[in-house]
Length: 289
Image 1 (cartoon, one colour):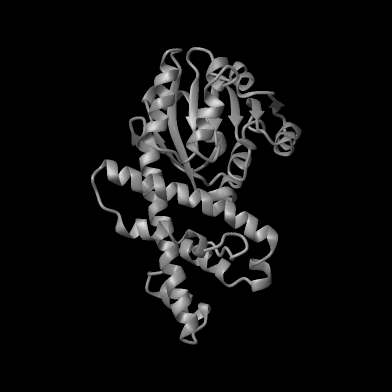
Image 2: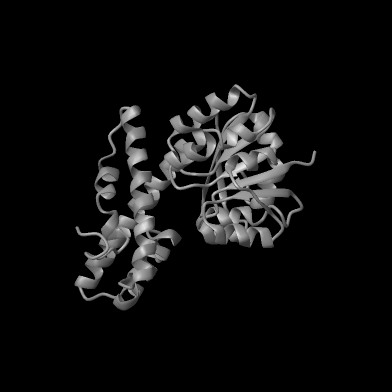
């Protein structure tokens, strides 16, 4: 069955995901509040929409990749929202890192129109999105998973991970992000100690890779720590890292909330959540400590 696709949210992560759909032969409609990424996707074969509702009117499967839960609600609900335009039998795929309760809220509203919802969280970053190497962590019904297979095959070559019912994709993503940021904190402190002791980052990485303690993700993080101070303090770098810091703090806040709901203690995660400005290298001018 041929499906029409739509995509809302063409930022750092969303744009490279959406960019695979029109070239794969799908009818494709996109929306973003910024004009430039929309123009890029239109040049690649997509059609521009003036609102999320218009995306819904022209799509059977719609991906959403916006920064936070409040943005998901903003594009889904209301007179110009996605739900107002979608037809019965459509599917909404939420790629954003959200609370499970947000996916449930959207699903409850969508069910009134017989529209299915899946939390199809993505992990791997923009670079892997470009090369179709993203991992998708999915929660939701098998019926929607089957319908969306052509969409998924167009955006990634990596096997899907169906974590369970609705909300399980979001839960798994929060667990994975918790691991990520704790790894970065470990790499930051080890690098700080090594430099203070007169050791090079190269020899630290060599030792850590040799015994398996330092992961590829930690190596990538440590690469940013070795940038010249002039580059790290540039306005462009600081602006980019401030955006990443805010997303990381939100992700960790949601992980801690999920822990409270499950009545488990996450003391290391709580500490790391307070250190993200330092871990991302924000200076006093960008965000006073």
